[in-house]
Length: 277
Image (cartoon, rainbow, N blue to C red; front, side, top):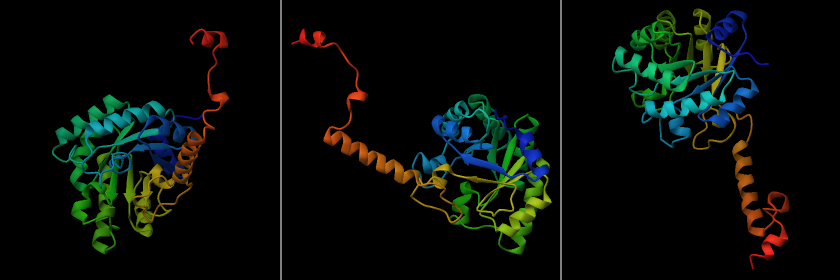
């Protein structure tokens, strides 16, 4: 029987040098499958804006969107630590607004933690939320909610100054109370150095194998999302191709009459049918 993952699981994994695994999910059925496979954590990412809702980026995603999908994931995940993204402008306005939205997400979904993007500027929010008893995962590097400020999805912290800043911000979010930090699109050697300099786990996405764990969007790693495939994604399966083929086979079977076959139908006594003519 699998054991429920908690923030303590993350802390112990870091201490033991054991790698952590995290995948996104946005619905009950997918969360249930991923959870049963044994992943440590499920992230209900605001990437649902791209993957589920068809937006060009994550900016339009709302707190209501995250609660709707987050609650479904929680119902499907029994053992994974469920982390829900706080969407754009749900925490930037003020510490009070951040605390209010974090509390609402936790209360209305039953999740285990929230995640928010940013370093020094959101440390007051991280501190307030964690002091209220809500675990927080931080997110540094390429922070998708700031895609417009970055001028697109680009690798971050490549200069000496920006690399030093990343290290300082990782230390700052740890001090503020974060139990883990996602590092996105960060040079591998820098991400490894960051992992050595802080005591909380680093979860990498496009940040190399030196992180304490990894996270991917499930639709990317299963080959289900074809609009854009980032360089850092490895497709572990071609589920999208299998889905398209199964639909094509279904269309053919309906067209030629081979589906539904007798084994897919329900019976009635011939005597009943004869009385209906």
